[in-house]
Length: 272
Picture 1 (spheres, rainbow, N blue to C red):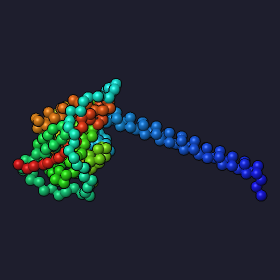
Picture 2: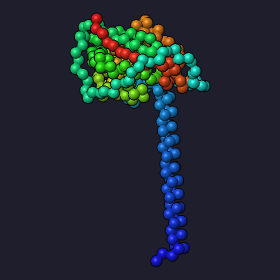
Picture 3: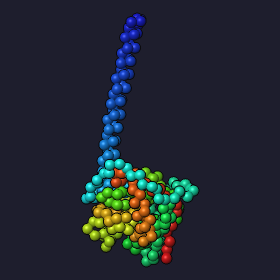
Picture 4: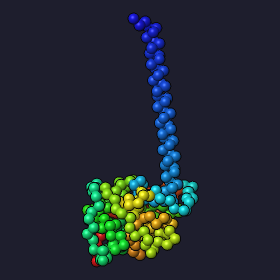
């Protein structure tokens, strides 16, 4: 039979073991937290000189490297939001298992219009040079996939782009399928520079991993020729993009959500 004194000692041992377990668990969580913090800081530094998608440039998010380096600012920008309130509506959540069949006319001219809270951004699409990409955008726009989505990332150091096309707004979203890289030897890409006005696909840093995320270049940006260039901004579209870029991004480190509330109210692709 267990005496009262033995019972007290047993309870004391159990209490001690519980305390040790809590301390071990706390140390493990602290190590994990520090590891995550270090990873996030690393992504911020890398993100300012590279675009990623899953992961655009993600996915994003959602990772390819460029040669420029980041020069962080001392404090986040507090620039005034130059854009209007988004139109009423919700983001579509539908995804697809495979790329849609290519049905566009490669010999025709296609234009994409992004009707945003900051103004209309027109894009002349390169159907002949990037048929899979243009076909995918025509398909997704027709499904309302881009409607009410935020342009979630603006880079202002090393590379100069606005990134859009993620329905989750996190940098990790996509349509559920991927499309092949195209047009990587476009005549506009010289000395690994994506010139201002280029519209190109984001990807994971691996070949053929483009989805729905894309980026708009507002100033010449040095990047490896790994991102499908599939369109060119119109003059009016560039003015809108410059306005967005001038408002800066909220971290002050050169890579973060834009201060401007950039929401694509409606995306359309038209054939002419």
